[in-house]
Length: 540
Image 1: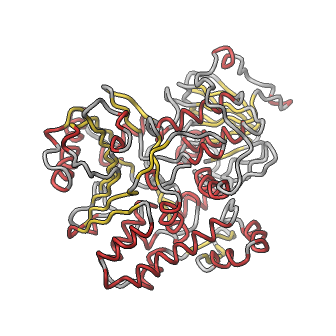
Image 2: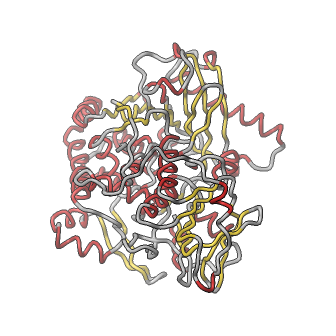
Image 3: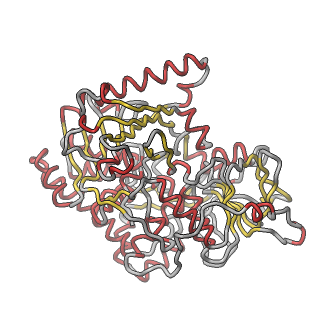
């Protein structure tokens, strides 16, 4: 998430001060990182602010029409904060500001909130827009949803018929993993034991950012042993290029190789890390991996009743209830700059809105490449783009199938990599599968199940073809992926399909306003690496 307020440049913020209007720089999707840490601390203390879910979602037309251009010279802004995009990050930022008294306007180009955590309905099916189940965002503002516990975080289906279920209970998971690799019992216990050391240290601190040396220095005097534990996995480096300090963490792959020798087990840990960070263990910071690999057992995974879209809707209702506003069908095309300051936004229909602070929940590539096109790239962003590259986008298949095609003991979440470990990070190489109707049958008509299928894909692979060729390729790729699931998991799957809709990287660009997927990075500790695939996150 990118924030600008009346300071000379638009930049990323690392954490926020409690004082209104002084948001400090943070990285893309920092709010998700803060949610993960805040959720732990809030298990020990209840949040004082409350969102009343009975508020209406829509914004009164009179209110929207009154959002006129302010006199910028007198700083008499109509809003304290304008947030571009109503994805989970944008909604969380908006709600947290609103409950503290800020006047917030959220601008969303689509007709519903949520971004990649949204939903859509077709023929009686409620499909989640993505695999994002981050409802601790609701707890951060005192709002709750009814959820259904999931006994299995994910069921791995891997080369050489390796099958591993990550059970909700840690002891059950470890027992199963050891049964697959009995000769590596001590190595398994030591590696995951290291993960728990880090997790427990994180869980004891009210962390804001692991990238703030001054903050960590202050925490050291409160929790010295915990800080020393974390310090074992962080090296502070000084960049001669940028003349700035940054943390180069130990990666999970190196730690695993200290205790484990079996190459297949090490490949399994690569797969564990891939669904954490979309890179292998050698590129996943140990702190990041530990947070997820333990948190899934600490709180477990729960699915929100009614689907993932309810998270965004509840946040949006809470935001409006606090007196702030959401404007839909509001496509922001430019961030307005004056004197080196971001002061407002311009929509595709020509309307302009102004505020003291501008927050972009678009990707940083779209923010700096499109919304701020022609502006000089801030130094912080130049340094960031030296470390980060764009990740591939994804291809999605949403299907409705006859319920009898699934065995009665089918798990909700699956990760499939059939034949070759080297295909783990390749486009279309691995498959993420979620079947939410296993937990909530209300999402589909009676006698039907929903399958959400995702795999990584490149935007370049879908460019430069006619509409006819595009549609043909879409069907061909989807057919191949469905065939793989039919052969590996559900014989007869194709004949059971009653509804199917395929989304390519071009589809996701149109609805999510992003050219590519999430950012990948070199192994430097950064909040952006913690944008976990949602079905590996516990729900508040």
